[in-house]
Length: 577
Length: 60
Image 1 (cartoon, chains in turn yellow, brown):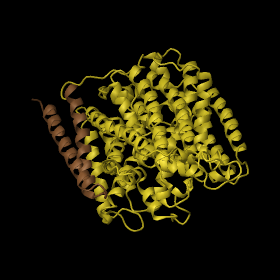
Image 2: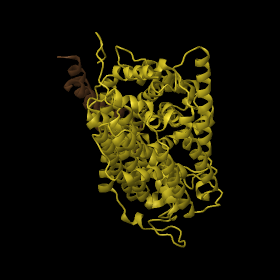
Image 3: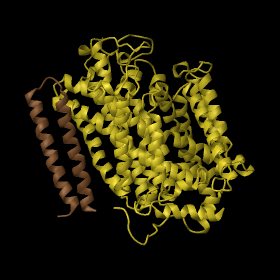
Image 4: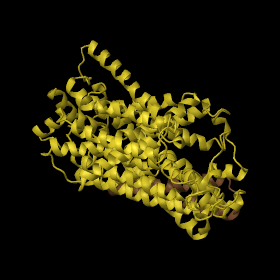
């Protein structure tokens, strides 16, 4: 076992330690300000009205608290693909596997989603890219495949080249939304939009026209929380940072803070800039921004707004240059996110390989490029599979993306467990008040999973359990051939330490099923009692998670061999740029 | 001149060509939005991003 761990650490050493604090910050920001910024403000205000501003703040603060916990973990144990590793370090192989699988599902699908996003925008001008039923044509698949292949080679050139390119793209992605906020607030800002109520109802106000439940529902369902979750990039590239002790906490925390400022600003600018008169609906008709159940809009102007919210507003107030830039950004932003997530997906596979959850061939680092090439190729191949022409796949991919949130559950308990079982390890960033902030992070992540709604949470549970089948196939194939590189996750110690993870996803599914009808539940426990239920159950599971934490073999090895921080191993010759 | 400096200068030229075309398109037709305007904005955007990337590569 020790020999295996030494071999895994050796793989970590081969990665190029070339990333600066700025590179890590911009990788995280590149994940946070993805293609979603063009649409999330419309979606959130359609669900919650002007109170969507509160949704952004709630979502941002919850994710910030989760990020603070990961800042301590990331500075303490910086590894590439680190998020998939912490669950194993704190709770052993069983919990580690479930959490890593959930994370893998979300990471591996994103490059394909973003490539499809770019093709989707191009289809407005070249209809031959999509069929009428909304799936890619052969030409569309070739176009999306070429785009993925282009960024595959960018990642292949090495982490330094990829990071610098990402920094350029992220500057663009940062400047354009900030410029949009300033220009819209200066040129067209109607303060009455924040207070006008379209349909009077008991308890409704112009600011919060649909009550408080949609304000919280919007946090999970309108893309708010998924925008902020991009902070993970700084953690996943941590093993390739020059000074991870300093860079990881700074990049993790400041990316979320900058994200909150940008997104709240965009939401305020969007609400103030909307002209209900030109949309042909009464002032305050926020819910009309989304199509009805038959996919029909009240007016044609609303349909145009839905397809390109900020560009439509900019065009309607005569800001033509900004309109062009916003349309161009619809191609640029998804491309940037595609590039970053190709790298993240590659590092996730690498991380799972180093844990022994997938074959060890995935941990082989190319000596010239200093990246694990096989996981990168696999990521490209899996991406191509997602292009297959089945419309339901796209929906499945959407469900799977929310699996990311589930993996963040372990951050809070892991901080407390490492304080107890790994007190010898250095902590360049120590989270003050973790007695409070760690359980809040756990409860917050639980609430976000719950707010994803039924049947999505149930689908998530199924997708996560499918991972077990995949694991068993790998395990038996490798064991039968005498290869012991895929580890067993079912020893009594690991089951005792990690059983709370598979149990909790089932409990969350049950809570979702019996919860608030607005979130798709059967309304057996309506709002606000559903919130109390989720919080109380989450506190119980947090205590269970902390109590069942162990001093894993990986942590023991880190302490015994003083390998908390991995130094780059020099090769004899060659090397990537 | 090393290759990163050359690439940086070429990127800057592309940026200004894109910006010039974008301004020209905006003032030529200040009402409608055309495909060609989006293309000019893309050239400008790619120029900006490449300039920053190659500037950083040159510095490090």
